[in-house]
Image 1 (cartoon, rainbow, N blue to C red):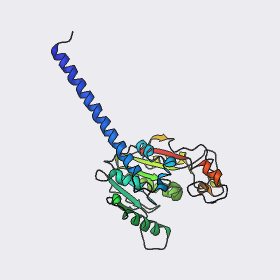
Image 2: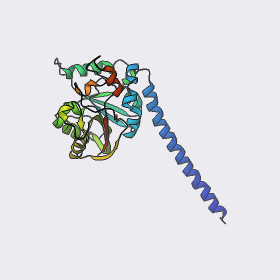
Image 3: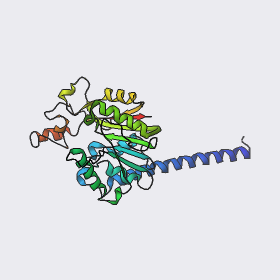
Length: 271
């Protein structure tokens, strides 16, 4: 038999546990809600939304541990596909840095890309809190103030940076992150045993893991959320043969559309 005091203690303890679980559930639902709203936002074009089936933004960001209160760095946002999701998701709660190529006023891809991104960010109030920093491939870059970031993300960039560029970018990410912070990597995956020269645009997963470890990271987990078993990686125009680029245009278009976008590694590293 329990005494009255013991019963009261058990009821009180159960109440605390229930309240804790409830708060945890509310917090989790809030994170999901923020992402859902950002992904469904009217500021995103139908064209960009149509790619959600291949890029799995919600599942990918949740795998990396994303929360709206985080300080997040996106390395080379490019056209801003992921920026459209990250910016509203953290607005007013966290911080988003876009570490992009600087505008040197030269007539080249890097300056043009920066100008286009600046124009995009000015086009909608949803991007008003995004802060751009400078990222220069293969040179030490301050992606964000040292030790300030909870999450550094790079989507389909490693093939552009090549080995030396990847190694430097990972070092830059390590510097920007807090202890325990996460580096999230998504990249076209080179099948084991396939010659990289015959699979343009694809990157070795094992090499990527080794490069991240060399920069000081620990591999925490990998996910197959962005996997595509139909992608065999050897095409006339490399990975750009597949959608969304479809570099061969109408030639065998139905075939490549049936394959879909590339098979991608999704890796989570921790500082």
